[in-house]
Length: 220
Image (cartoon, rainbow, N blue to C red; front, side):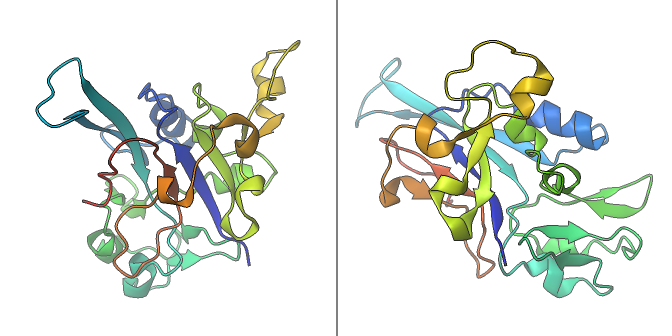
């Protein structure tokens, strides 16, 4: 069994919101709702008593964490919310009754009720794309090469982003979106202490965040 996830290098993320926009477009997310939000964390002083410009800020993309032991699945009365063999958490809309128990159980507040369809929606990790060997749209459209998609069970070498390491020649969308680079070839070196995840309430969130030389605030 795989455990698909996204790893984001927060030292590379510039907060452009390209991932948010790309997600809304490809998944037809209704106005006012988001499958992926980018939060600004900071500013914080680089040292005690410091003031601008001696401060730092980073950006934190937050969406469904495709947890290993998801609370949303446990509370769903119709089994509409379920875990696939690839480790992703999905919603069968034909079974969803719109009760929103899952939305209330989610520790991260990343589910919402589609008022028109009366079903709950959230990030699917672009299952319609990954099942065809493509990248999730938020990864494919990350201009800073901060986001990478892969299998936690296979280690860091399995995580890939869009485009070649040194892309030359055809720079069309079709070319870039079908050529992948490895996380380990792009991001600066990091240690285990630089790798973080959102608060774990027993649900075991899968997404990982790399942050070097700054204090991690995503656990609050």
